[in-house]
View 1: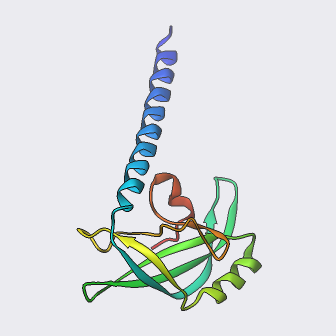
View 2 (view 1 turned 90 degrees about the horizontal axis):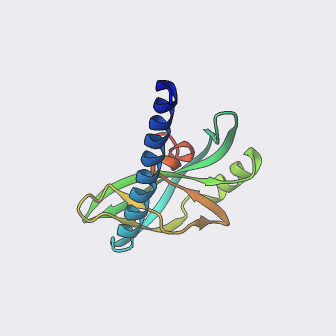
Amino acid sequence: MSRKGEATIFVGTLALLLALTGYALQVILLRRTKFWPKTWATIHSAHTEVMELDRKTDIMLPCFTFSYAVADKEFSGRFSLFTNGQEEGESVARQMIERRFEIRYNPKRPWTWYIPDKKMAGYEVEQKMGPQMEGLYPKD
């Protein structure tokens, strides 16, 4: 086998190992969140943002900023909902202001949060929980 062929196999194997490691890490993180304490969060603002679905496709999603309190300290976060287009996203964004929802937070690092609901208002929740979700997470 040529050096180029060996290098291609090596790079491919390394990429596969990195992808599997990332997936395993996400599964571990999601399992840990089941034991985190719960609290209520409130959505304070919403607007649509352009998100990169893949390298060729951009979509408009409603993005939300929320806050929650732990031990009398305020924390905040952002998430988006996967809607069907800009018009629907803007409508959902308006409806969600002041909505309360449950989150879980890391008791050792209360600024680290997770939304356990997979859907909100009938739409898939997009949140930062692993490298494969970075594209649809609102920019901080």
